Image (cartoon, rainbow, N blue to C red; front, top):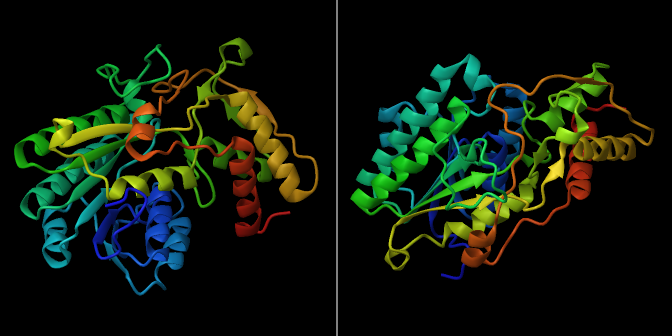
Length: 343
């Protein structure tokens, strides 16, 4: 199968389909005529209205089936696999957020460990052509060597969220080895864009501006020790996933499990990102926007820099993310102003 061509005869199961990445991936597949079975528990970690707005876009597609369920519910997951027999599974359901994992660890064990185990067991008993699952750049912890490469040692996570994602990679590797499940882990790097997650900094900064609150910048106010992030636009993430769907690992790779970074390969200073967001919001509103700022110590679990090497991804699918933060943030602020009807 050509890596740039989707097999629209296959059935795709996407967990976390009301989430940010899950929604955009589902929409891309549905637009191309694919059959999408979607699972989400619509939890209230952030604004449920935003999740429902995403689903409202997907529901009119006749090839779309939505099931409200929690992947931690093993019986329900087995029933879905039994009924729909998916060919390709993309597990994007997870409890997200580094800082929230410090306050509410139970949610991470339930969704990210038990839930992912249920997905693996279902793929074992109802064999699939390819399992793709969300990992995270957070697995690199406080690694000093940059850019981060997939071969780097990732044994020192600095948050429970990161530990659960590292666990997912180990679990997937083991299941692939024991039960010949072709599996691909995706280490996402700071994904942003329209219909994004309100718990992400760029979204929160925009909300705080309209609430006339100062934005909190966690770098101690030390501009010589600025945070760097490899900000990756949502369309680039979806393009990478789409190209990988029909390109599973095979025995020629010596293992049926592999991991890829999906990042922009162009880290930006957090302050540069904030200045760009101000300019884009100014363009959307046609007036000057300057955020009120307060500087605070770096939070536990945060890391000073993320920077993806994308060589393995390029070699596998001839693609690397390329959207600039100027282009991506302009699309976000245009969407935000229209969606929330702000002036």
